Image (tube, rainbow, N blue to C red; front, side, top):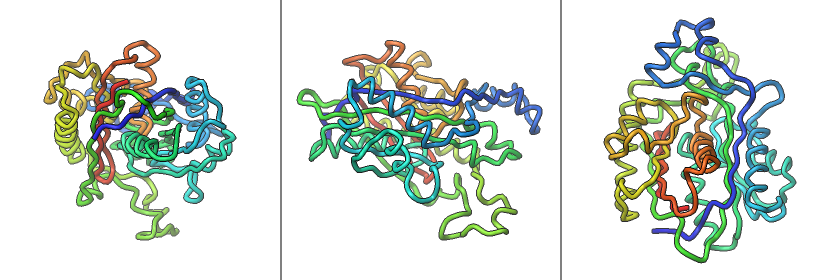
Amino acid sequence: MSLPAAIIGWGTAVPDGKVTNADLEARVDTSDAWIVERTGIRERRVAGEGETTASLGTAAAAQAIKRAGLTPADIDLMIVATASPEQPLPHTGAFVGEALGLRCGSFDLSAACAGFVYELVVAASLLQTVYDRVLIVGAETLSRIIDPEDRATTVLFGDGAGAAVMARTAGEPGLLAWDLGCDGSAAGLLEIPAGGSRLPASVDTVAGRGHYLKMAGQEVFRRAVRVVVESATKTLERAGVDAADVAWFVPHQANARIIDAAAQRLGFGAERALVNIDRYGNTSSASIPIALDEAIEAGRVKEGTTVLLVGFGAGFTWGSMVVRF
């Protein structure tokens, strides 16, 4: 099941603008203590005027290409994972590719907060055929699809982007094992109900706030812990490694309590879980690559390091992967 592919470049981009818990206290019925206790979040980055999903994705991708020692002309394919696209049509990758000067193929991938893990699997698979280098990007401006009056969601989400350049390797496999899944029966737990073919945009859908994200928080929490543990356990078994063999647990940054509960059940102490939700909030498809970028730049992830990645979110979709750098 393993694939000989490696991450050879990485990058992130986050807006300068911040919204703190104190800022939210002044706007909705909440408090810093409540938010920190329930989520672990203290602040989140929010895109300003002129900043979009594509502009953040472009900045992260440019950094990843540079760190890989490449130019845009060296990229054979680009995949962009996003739950908050630049616009309904064309795909966000068209805008990112144009800004970077790419002339290769590109497409968007929609797997919500598991998007980056899905991208890794797809990119590594394509690297076994005709491509040598694939650029993957997770980019979001979730602040644009969150109801500012909904306390259940407005405290959770932030904006940002992460990117990686992947290349085929001739040596040991870099992607040791993975697990992808989706339980569509739970699709209604986390959704934007209006704006698609099921409920087209209209005056009524706008008035009913149907274009904002809706979430059943308690049920999402319950399912998230279970699927993270089940998927990660399956992936570790497929890779033939124990939790003790993994240097870092890199979960999607959705909620600090979900991360703590899953880490404990998987056998990871808090010191081996990469957590930055306190500074960025939930950035969906960007959360895992942002956490990886910070760990690589800090020297915590280097050649030979084995990490476990786990994403989960709307759909109800999940993905886990064991990667050896």
